[in-house]
Every structure is written in C-alpha cells, then in structure tokens.
Image 1 (cartoon, rainbow, N blue to C red):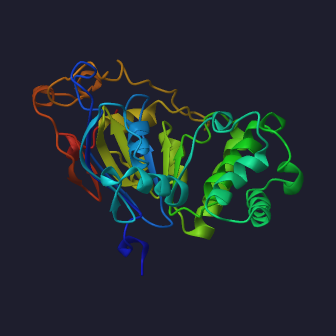
Image 2 (image 1 turned 180 degrees about the vertical axis):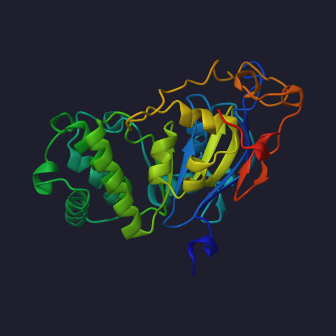
Length: 327
C-alpha cells in the first residue's frame, strides 16, 4: 500500500475556532483543513499570529477558553473535538506527542531527567525497572551519550540541543502515531538545529510516525517536509508539495515569505521584506486578508474572499493564482 492510499493519522476538516465577539473580530481559525499520513512530514508555515499554534493545540483538544468550534479534528479516525476528558488524557499520553520550541519550558528544573522520561511509562503500568530500561534506550536512540548517567542529571546540566533530544525521547516513549513539532529548532544554533532535524527525520523513517512540522521558515519547511500548508490570518492560503511550493508558489504571500529569506549564494538578491503587518484578531477586512500587503491586489481582492481551490498540483486561495505572480 502506498503512502497516499493509507488512511491519515491526522485529518483536520474545515476547522473553525472563534472567540467571543468582544475578544476577536474574526475567527482564529477559518475553515482549516489538512492531513498527515503515517511516515509523512507535513509543514505548517506562517508568520506569528497566523494561527499555527492554535491549530496544533486543537489536535490535543487544548483550545482557548470560551472558544466555539466547527468542523472536525480526527486522530486515527476519532474526532478530538467530541472526546471526553478521559479520552483526551489517553490521546495526549499515547497517540499524539508534542515537541515545543523551548525544551526548558517542558521540564521541571527540580526533577531529574529520568523522572521526566519514566513518569508516563510508569503511569501506563510499566514496572519501574522496565521503564528505566526503556528510558535509557530512548536516550541512546536520540544520540545522548552515557544515557545511564543522563537519567540522573537535572535539566540545567544539559545544553539546549541535548535537552531538545531529551524532550524528543520523551515524546517517542509511548510510540505515538503522530508527532507535532512546534518550531522545535527555534531556540537552537544552526549546527544543533541541523542535528535535531536529522534526528527527527531518522526517527520518523524508522518508526513510521506521522509528523506535523510547524515553523515560520518556509525554506526550512521545504527542506524537511513532503508537503507544506501556508497559513495567513487563520486560513490556509496555499498547499502543495515542498518542491513545487519552493519552485513555483501560486500565492503572493508564499512568494513573499521566500523573497524575505536571506540567501548565501554569491550574487543572490538581498532579502525583500513583506510590506505592512499581519492582520490582527481585532481586524476583519472584507475580501482577501492579505490584500493590503499585496502588490498585485485588484479591486476584487478587497471585496471578495478567495476560496482555496485547485491550481496545478496543489491548492491556492488567490484570485490571480493562475498568473504566476512574483512577490
């Protein structure tokens, strides 16, 4: 069976998240749909405030207080939004694991790494001795030298890169079907970032885990992911394979993200920032939310919201997507 024919481990279907009217003028998420299949890495890209983190948290049933939802979030075919509290606890401990951008925020500085790694295993009924053995195996798998000694150390005794490896080991302890990596390399230097990305790729290939990789860096997503979804103002504005997205973006926002990425090649053009600022939750402009920042906007863009529609081998929400516009 090919990957494309296997059932998705994650399927977000027309997800809408809206806060009370006195807190937001537009939806936090507006009709977001995406899929991740076993063994596949899918990117979710956008500026801060685009809705990436809310989309990630919805997978774990963690939504803002007072939020109203529509659509569905299915993990292995089960709708997270319809789960009871006990079902959500099981989901978070066994089926979905999350790796955050700051590993130090994930660990209690007063507890040893061994306690952190074995807590979930022991809670699921694994005997303490077996849990310790599994923890050592996990640390060895993510490249921690002297895993036995590492179990006795505290978080402050690890570098940022080594601590992120510990967090990844903990995420893999329950052999989850889905790994959500929310900007897992942002706090790391470039060399350590490359090591962590290679580790995630290897573990995904070995274990067949589906991964949703969240980042603000489109070039990084293109290097890591099989497919990429681009978000802006709570909506998916483009989706296609990583290679095609990088070579021939169909949405001006995607092209703008690529244009503002610094290049190291000799003679490369300097980065060109996207003008203006992202739309805040207090604003609900008619038409396309990107129109005010888009050099190619026409009158229709400010009046009519573009639907996410097929363009080439992917999808784009732009009235002029077929024109091959430059940023």
